[in-house]
Length: 341
Image 1: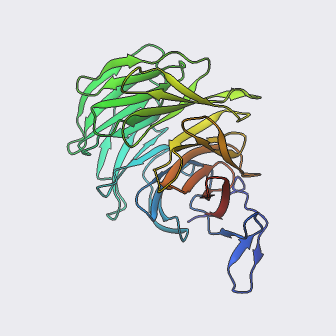
Image 2 (image 1 turned 90 degrees about the vertical axis):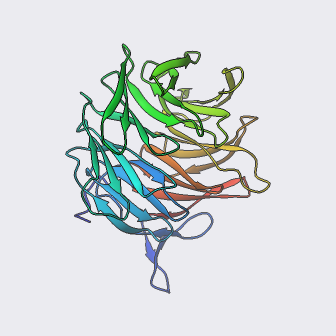
Image 3 (image 1 turned 45 degrees about the horizontal axis):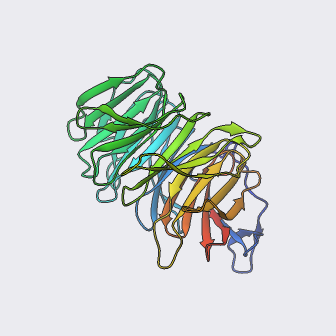
């Protein structure tokens, strides 16, 4: 896995009687595993009930069993930091984007080399979204463009450029032809992927929009904002099907909210949204009321760059300083760190 660099700072740990490694936590010992990356982790995505993929400043894409912390595979072909990873739940394909301006497609259980490359962007690629049928890929960049690709051939099917549209994130609406995009121009856009035209522009925000996610039923979108000292730093819920207006805001982070995700619905669980921030905190919110249900403070983790929901009560959080954290939501009122790798 390579030498552990100084940017990764692990918690003070103790060996338990059974020989496993742990550290003190509010709900018990936190399991410590070998780091999946040798530098800051920039992005993470859930693949299956046990697998996740992640990318980092070490230029690699790692496939891990998040329950055991084991690294099952590693893809190393990017020349610079990996900025985004995305996967399709019904296939073995993983896509990664990088500061090297390249997008690559990997076979989850295949060879170490990429199956397909998608060259063409002029600057760092900062958005990735796969169509529901996994046949098309949407990418976005700081070069002000959004592109649509044929996954099988690697052909760029169409390209759209908008002035000042520095893309920060993309996500495909389940079962639809629409793609949601956030931008450094403080705007959230809905693209019709068929002709790659802007179908709707949501009401402008006061701060850079850093990330977005769409609910499983395609009814809502959530976006997150940059900010400092509590100014900005919010997440915002948008209606996608009727008014296409703002529904609710979630305020409580003190620095940039870097990531936001919907938690899958579980039996008797309140519809919830999770956010991670540069203030080293992860928060879970009641989707409908905006109330904060639980907070986890990952001291020393630095900026928390990315979140992935594994199930209705498990979150993965990518951090700059201490790897990938596994968080468990207990009874919708306590968010507990249970492992780190």
